[in-house]
Image (cartoon, rainbow, N blue to C red; front, side, top):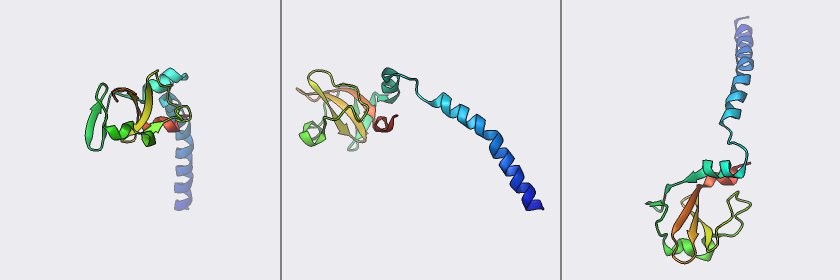
Length: 116
């Protein structure tokens, strides 16, 4: 009988907390629109290969090579690259760099790929 009471109490507790959990999840969701989604993933600093990087730094030559260049930026939910720039992948993050000098113009957390 005691186990049955504990089981019913547990089920009632879980059922009563479900609406609160759903409300909290809805409040944490990013706002609609690509600008709000992009800015929620945007970062100003990150680490790659045990080195800190920030907007304005120049990336090593390796990250400017074709294997690191991201041409399918749209399926990764990244904004279109500006003229004279392209997206690359560094340390789990997507980084927009200038074609000419490899200067970091913008950076996005890698989790943007899983954004719905």
